[in-house]
Amino acid sequence: MTPSRSEFLTIRGLATHVRHWGRAGAPKLFMAHGWMDMSASFQFVVDALAGDWHVIAHDWRGFGLTDRTGNDTYWFPDYFADLEALLDHYSPDAPVNLLGHSMGGNIVSVYAGVRPARIAKLINLEGFGLPATHPAQAPGRYAKWLDEVKAPPAMSGYASLEAVAARLQKTNPRLPADRAAFLAQHWSARNAQGAWEILGDPAHKMTGPLLYQVEEVLACWRRITAPVLWVEAEHTDMWRWMGPKEEARHEVDRRLAQLADVTPRMMPDAGHMLHHDQPEALARMIEEFLAA
Image (tube, rainbow, N blue to C red; front, top):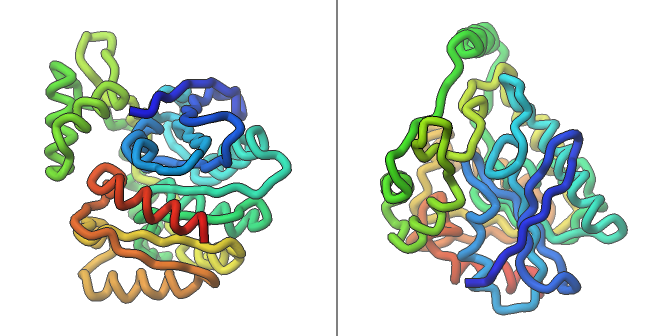
């Protein structure tokens, strides 16, 4: 297993955990994790990389070992600003190779359109975006958010690391036991009651009060100038967020068509956590794309 080293940067007032793999002078590859995940999630892909890389992956605010905000809502623009601070610190003068999974894929794709000159190559793993919304949904969305502010969500506790690993395997039945055991150590920590609790601020489970404006997102995507590797999983469950499968496929293809220079790939025998299910195949895809 490729060893990693941890560093903490103060980014916009929060102690932000950054994990590094590889030689400091090697070409940089930045990786951004998804919702209720953390930087160590990329360990298996890093292990499978054949080249000489300095992989840099941080924990988003309120996840992993990065500080929580203390607020009851997390806002997407904050992720963009945190990412920019990270890139400015580690690569102030050169465009970067940037990868994101799921929520991280959504963040890096919008950012790549907002700051196109900062990105050399972009890799989006299952970052489809959210279902389109319409204004009539706003009253119900605000009402749901207000209800959750008064009764905020909480994290479940687990009796042991083995129980955490079992929870990971329940969510992803393809996850081997050894990988689940590794992730459990990084994904959780003991709380004040002695139970193992996921390292994620429960506020991340809150309903966002603002509607998802897909056309605004696509306006950003159309400004991406970097080549994009778009990787979907053959057995993804993300369709359930986008509606009936046929309609969802049409909508995803419409979004994909907004990208000027895109290489779409399908990862066989993998679910949404494709970096856990097929890390070797994903590493090959990544390195072939970066070498092209």
